[in-house]
Image 1 (cartoon, rainbow, N blue to C red):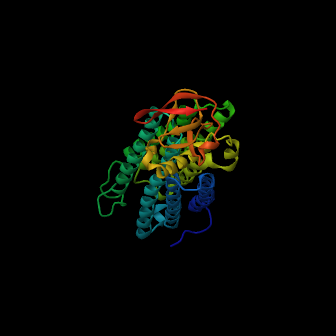
Image 2 (cartoon, rainbow, N blue to C red; image 1 turned 60 degrees about the vertical axis):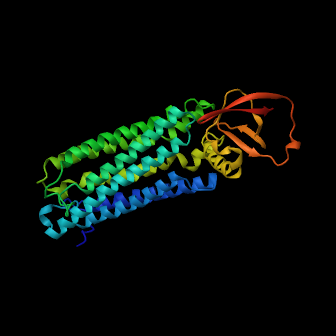
Image 3 (tube, rainbow, N blue to C red; image 1 turned 135 degrees about the horizontal axis):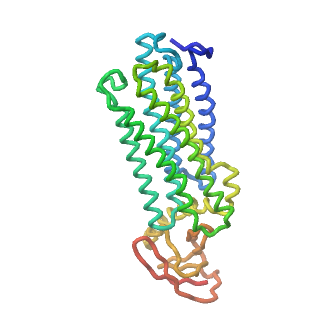
Amino acid sequence: MAAPLSITADNRGPLVNIATWITLVAMVLMALTKIATKWVMIGRFQADDGLMFVAMLAGVAQSLAANQQVINGLGQHRSTLTPIQFGNYEKATYAARALYIVTTNLAKLAVLYLLASFTRTKLRRRTVKGAFYFTALWTVVALIVVLLQCTPPNTWDTGGKCIDLLAFWIVYAVVDVMEQVAIGFFPIFLLWELHTSKSKKFVAMGAFTPNLLTIPLIVARMVLLFGNLQNPDSDLTYNTFNTAIIMEIHTMLSIVVACFPFTKPLMDSLSTGLLTSDLRSATARSAARSRYPRFGLSSIRSPKIVSDAKREWFGPSVSGNFSTLDSGEHELTETSHPKDMVINRTITTTVEFEGDDKIYETKV
């Protein structure tokens, strides 16, 4: 039976639907904008786009589960519900919490993947990758725990034999806050040494820190959930209203803030290539690997020039322009007619690749 549409002191559930649909629209628009902006920038989709798209779908599914919670009694007194309604409410709550974990963590993984593409040193790359793999593993573990929270087959029935849900959600909230803090401060660790103006550097760092806005929601949800789970025999469907509405806002906001770095105004302010050059160079390296497999160019990943030489580069049996971008990335551009090049002098430059050192003749 559908919940009454009117909002009263004994039926607060429709407020959850209002908050859900407002934030859902903003989330979908931001996610699609992020994916479309990346396509315009580099002409193809990357792993972070896939992660964000799946997170968006999970967020939509989570909002539908929240709607089923409202239909089956969320925000109403438990005494007014039939056993069937309460059973459906528990199933919807079970699904909403599982999808909450999936959505928020996929959004974090998308941001970490994006940050990893900006790293220029092994230490920074390993740090971000370590955070990425930890978050992915924690997502799987947390999801399994929630899905198997009570004795099968009715794993959604909290009236049966279940794990200590209060302890689990406390641990989950602590890990969630730690991950959000790490993601918020990673840009400082990764982008501080970029050779660009301080204003653009601060804009880039600030673009990745709005995720810290989710921390107050995590804390508030945990405080309210703590009271609810400590008294499981209380008026559960009525008392968990505030927890549910905060969870909905947090779910949608996690995707919105993860997409924030790719809004049009920010990308315009970073038009010097602080961010876009790294994304485009990834495409260039992929093209180089497929175009020159017999010349050993597959090793071109994150080279750095030890000396200050640049401009034109000649590798084994292939020529081209080897240019330094604003981000510090180096890009190889094929030249079809080497005879058109102007050579003034010759110096020797060491180019360091991942795993080996090679000496090439650099002409400037």
